[in-house]
Image (tube, rainbow, N blue to C red; front, side, top):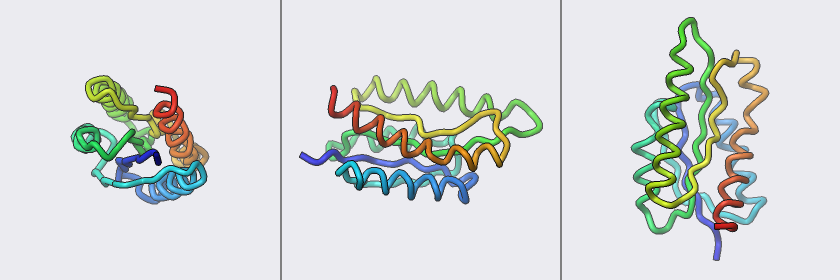
Length: 134
């Protein structure tokens, strides 16, 4: 049985999340798993509803989140990531499916974000391991 993943990808900082998306897809192929659905959302804060829709599907074994949250002049980046991460965890537990955190940030500069595009690859790896082990 092939493991089937769904991706939820933030459009904010799309130049970086596009790189992450490609890395995640490439790693999924390397691991022999399939990405069956991708949903683009405006930003990391907007991910929970899309995650929920994917978790409700019987043909998706796990959901991978992909996003970048760069530090701004206020603490907004911290609020965004904290709230999204909390709800992502809640959805994973509610639907009894792995939902992995491929979100880099908060507190990063754009340069630091470039160095962390591999978070998507790690999130794919975690999703696959969780499906196999649970």
